[in-house]
Amino acid sequence: MNDSDHQTQAPGSLQPLRQLVGDGVAVPCIDGIERPYLSCDAAASTAALEAVLARVEEFLPWYSSVHRGAGFKSRRATDAYEAARAAALHFAGRTPEGDVAIICRNTTEAINHLVYRLGLEPDDVVVTTVVEHHANLLPWSRAARCRYVECSDDGTFDTSDVVAALDSRPAPRLLAITGASNISGWMPPLEEITSAAHERGVPVVVDGAQLAPHRPLPRGADFVAWSGHKMYAPFGAGVLIGPRTAFSEGDPFLAGGGAVDLVDLDEVEWTEPPEREEAGSPNVIGAVALHAAADELEEIGWATVSEHDRHLSRLLRSGLASIPGLRLLGPGPETETLPVATFVVEAMAHSLVAARLSAEAAVGVRHGCFCAHPYLMRLLGLRREEVQAFRDQVRAGDRSKMPGAVRASLGINAGEADVARLCDAVRRVVTTPPDVAYRQDTASGDYFPDGPDGFWLTPPEPHSATCSPG
Image (cartoon, rainbow, N blue to C red; front, top):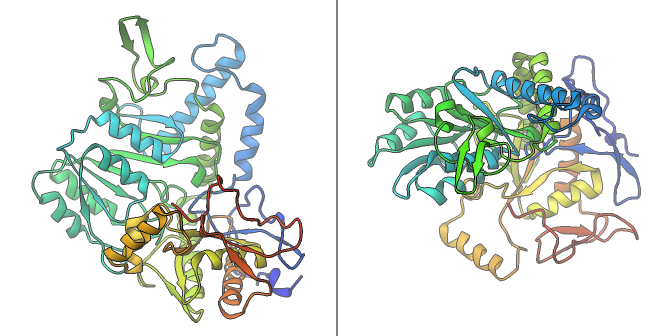
């Protein structure tokens, strides 16, 4: 193994705050050497904290149905589930007197759930921004008219830009905004923006998916949603929090068992929230995991997590920016971001950069459009006609020229040595030709090395999902 495959941390260098399950597992590389896997894709999904796995394993023997079982296990499982709900409220800085925590699958489901429960009409206006993840764009645009806050060339906007959209007529029904971008790591000034919206009588919905593992969730927002799989609890649970009154009347998003008090063939009495919003058997294990992750982050302390993030972000962005032929997207070094860096390489496809990092250095990154197409198109500076040409190619089944970028994102399990290893690997990919040929699969747009027999990086079957589309 090359010396660069193992970085020795100097005394006083930035250390990981916690280890995650699977950190350092060995994976094969194209040269026949197995290397410790370096995951730089925390913005997409994180592995489990060791404390989360331990809590899940401790709970599993006691798993049972919740809310309706009379047996000891059912009562114990119900207690664990409701404790997780209370922990979610606490994590978001809320109390059960005014708000409810609805446990769902993820942020996408939470926002779709909220769109339905708000009863939006086609002529209602929702103010949102071009920075949003698709989860905070598509559900609103399907139900109402969206008014978009544009961004500048560096992917940011000011409170005044949001205020202008709020003050336009007709008056908006609500504001839906991200807590942090999953592409640039930029964090809008949520406190100022929320205050401006409330001064105008406009409720605020915050997509907290990227923010939740890095910073406290916004206390002033009316609604907030986030996902366990981005905060070290990848067991399929997410949370929607909002005022109890928003869910006290009307039909729930999902209809079924557990959401009712009484059912006849022609009449139903829905139960009170939050149970009204959680039809069917809930994901108790996911809730337990989410509770454990919240406990662990709060034990570390937000001041410690935030400072670790700031140091990581500076190292990550400065290290990548020093590589010739590489261009970082998003705001400059004077702007604080999460430890997320998205970049393009001159004269090299984003999918090829990602494939080489994996096959040659055991470094996992994300590439493509990151489920935030409008934002990325702006950061790339693409004209509308260019985007239309790409769209036509995709419709013809050819993703070989899909625009995109490469994203490296880190969490509390990363340290200075991990940043150095990533930057060394990117530098080698950018400056050194590959030792083997890479071929592109037209249908997916992804590259695959011509490796030895049995090498795991093989093109997908025609029905398989691809890496790039988002």
